[in-house]
Each structure stands twice: as structure tokens, then as C-alpha cells.
Image 1 (cartoon, rainbow, N blue to C red):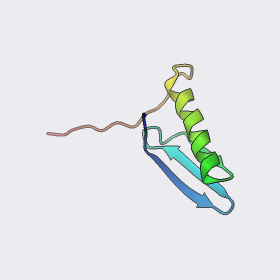
Image 2 (tube, rainbow, N blue to C red):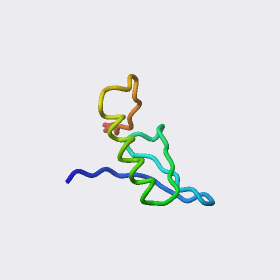
Image 3 (tube, rainbow, N blue to C red):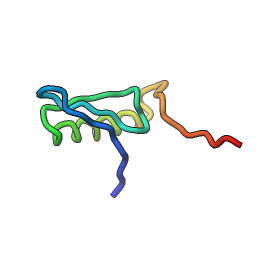
Image 4 (cartoon, rainbow, N blue to C red):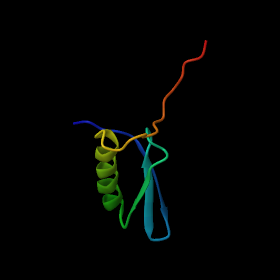
Length: 63
């Protein structure tokens, strides 16, 4: 089973979050489970190649 890391928090009655690799693309849910389902949908959309110009987080090793 594949996995990816995500950042999340609760703001009043909403759960907000984004995928660690894609910090510019946030989503929300009415529960943590709802947020996780929306994050899965977001991941599929961002990695499908259907959305042009997707910004992604990377790490650069410095000498």
C-alpha cells in the first residue's frame, strides 16, 4: 500500500490540510476522515498529469 505525508489541523468545525509534497494545494473536510478522502482525491488529481503546471516540493542537497 502506498502512502504520503500530509499536514492537517482543525479550525472551528472544519479540518484543513495539504499533502506535504504539494503545499500549495489545500483541501478541507467536515471530519478527519472526510479530509483524508479529499486528500486522496487531490493526490490522484495532482499526479494524473491532467492538471498543467503543478508545483511540487523538493529537497536540494548543498555541498
